[in-house]
Each structure stands twice: as structure tokens, then as C-alpha cells.
Length: 298
Image (cartoon, rainbow, N blue to C red):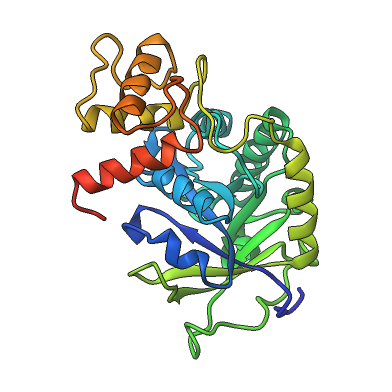
């Protein structure tokens, strides 16, 4: 597969393991985008996924989400769970399946799981997803059937863990990588821990960012309103509850109904925002800021 190139954009991938991220500092680095862990298995939602989404969007970064799979579950159910949590969040990078555990299953079983998940997400969202794994797992557990989906491959250098290899090596299933994770020990301003750093192939980056800008709905990345569902709505509800606003009937149920509209209006009135009950580009960042202030995080 191809070598790394200076024209390739730098993409991070993060989860709750990175803790509180200062996205304003990252904005001033060479980083162009980020993949955020959204879900795992059939029930786990990363507790910092929405916070990271808002922070990355405010920093002007391209954003994608990944799902860490358990291949012993139904791939369709895991895919549906991932899609449900996306809600109205806007993708700038393709959704990603992270598959790196075989759970003592055969190569054919693991590959079929991957293809089923990828096909379900592709069909449901209209966006062709990518698959992440490490080099040795791909070599051992992936059949040629998966090669119709772009590869995000990880491989590190024992001799230069931080700087990484110039290319991951050869794989029979793919001629090129879409993204190469060359280190899990990167250091970036704004993140206090080690972080995975990737290069995305420049031509792939141009293609997907152009196509996704046309695929996404016109509501934009920062608009939640009546009738919306999903993780973003639930996080809004949880943040309002943490700040002392009342949702007595339904609580944090993930649905943007009349009760949530009333609570958002009260929040907007308190902080001098336009009071329309819609959680948009002014309301969402202010909500996250006030919750962080409450927890002495800012």
C-alpha cells in the first residue's frame, strides 16, 4: 500500500479515554478532522461523544464517528444502535466500523459480520462507511469481500512509536488505504493524554468531504428542534437537568418534544439568548459551557 505523504490531512481519533479536550487549542494545530467514538456493542454510548462533537465542530474540524463492534452480536442490531445515536448530528467524514476482536470466531464469521454492518449503515444512511482495524487483524480475519469498503488501517513502529512507519505494508484485500493510523502515542496541544494520529489519503479526503457536504441535510450541524431524536437530544436534556432545569414528565428520553422546548426557552431566557426553544449554534455551545463551569472544568 501507498506511503504517507505531506499533503495528506491529519485526522485524530478520540474517546472518553482522552478526558476533557481543549478544542480551541487543537484549532490552532495542523489537525484537519477527528473521528469520535460514539458507540460500542449494542448498549454503550461514549459519555464524551456529544461534548467532543460540539467542541470539534466549534473548532472548524471535519467530524466522523466510529462504532467499536462486538462480533458476537447481531451486526444489524449494532448498526441500528449506532445510527440511532447519530440522531441529527452531521457527518463530515464517513461512519466507521472499528473491528479488532475476533471473539474466537472464524475468518468467515468475522468478515460476514463486518460486511453486514457496513451494508446496513450504507443502505440506511446513504453514506459508504469505512472499516478500521489493525494490520495483523486484517491479514488474519478479513476476506476479500470486505475490500469494497475503504480501509482505515493501524500499524505502529516498535523502533519509532511516536513517529511511526511510512507505510503499513501490503494486504491482499486492498491496494491502498483510505486512512493510516501510524501512532497511538501522539501528542497534540489541547489533549493531555497520548492520542491516535492518522493520515487520510488526500484524494479520499477530497472525495468524501465533497460528497458528504451534498448528502447532509440542510439543518446544519447545530440545530435540534421539535421531533428530533437521538443522542444529541438526550445530551441536551441531561445538560439542562444538571443545570437545574425541569423535565418532570419525560426526563432525558432522547425526544425533542414540548417539554424540552419549554426548558430550552427557559435556558435561553436565563442566558440572554434568542428564546425560540430551538437548540442551535448559539444555544448548544453555551449549554456545554455552563455545564463545564458547573463542574469546574473550564
